[in-house]
Amino acid sequence: MTVIGNPNPTCCYGLNNRLTWRNLSLIVTLDGAADFDILNLNLLNTATYRTGNYSNLRSESFREASSNGGQPRLNAVGSDVISSRFVEDGSYLRLSNIQINYRIDIGKKWLRNIDLAFTAKNLCTLTGYSGYSPLVNSYSYDLSRYGLDNGSYPLARTFLFSVKATF
Image (tube, rainbow, N blue to C red):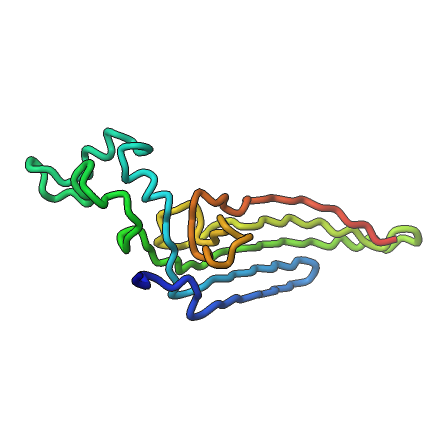
């Protein structure tokens, strides 16, 4: 048995900013992790004739006419075995939250102000990882499989508009 990657990040970081000017405020949250590995089982599934896209496999596989292929020869012994060619760097920077608030001062006896807010979550992720998202959680119930991506769902991008009244 050989260790071919480390799923534990060397560094996790985050940045939270709040800018306010008069009745307008902007909140921006960034987070990320650096220097960790993910075993991308999605690549393993598409690298074999059993489950892959056949035309894609033919164009990317090694053969006499094209010796520059990035994948092993079709049906080669061991081409469907877990190896370091399926391990990728999972480092990322994510814009996880942006919120814009505007407060309207009413100043009436029964209504003091109204706050309008727009929030967007999980807007973008900058990464070199080829899977859906470097935030993998395929086997959350089994810690011995930490760092494996087997078709895990990415985080949903959500948008929210809200109105808050203060009486």
